[in-house]
Length: 234
Image 1 (tube, helix red, strand yellow):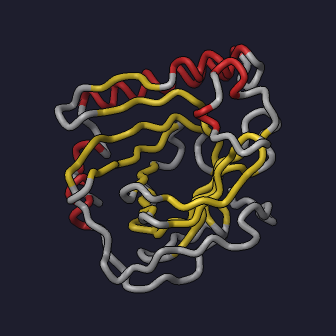
Image 2: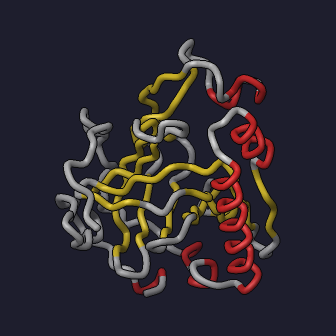
Image 3: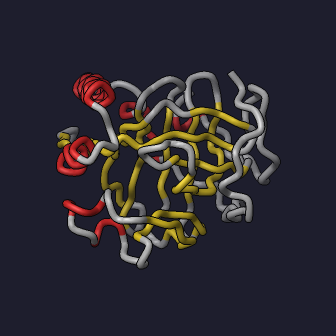
């Protein structure tokens, strides 16, 4: 199914668990566990389901969405901290709102990356962003993953570039990622580059022309946003 075929659903229903698909308009959580011990959720973003099939999960994070993000224990923003101490100083989490343009996130089951689409004001398409990450685990309330630091930016003219290679190297240096995992991540990145060069899905599918249903409401961040799923469907 392509962007032009995706349904638009009017309401926000309960999330589907136990292997069922979510319906367009459902609200779910898109979460990332922290690196290192990998158990605690440190990023949580309520999103609206655009499409959920055996081939693709597409979700929309609207501007103004209340999210959870990591900060340093003293309140310093993570990317304001020098790289040498960015991953070694104590952290906590805070609630904050996503005030940029909305973000469309696309993920194929089993892929060790997701593809995000960004727009500037007036729906001027900016770029695709390949976020290298652990393949997502589905549960009744959403999907969980772990970020792998390294990313790829893909421009409208189909050119591309690696992003955050310094963070990828630093994460290895401080022990947040072992050599074997780093090797798998780099291999995944090269596989994503091959998809970009071939202009495969989802880049070829016209998602840059997609628009959210104006009837959708902004999902609410639940109080138990960091709850551990009781059971993970296989």
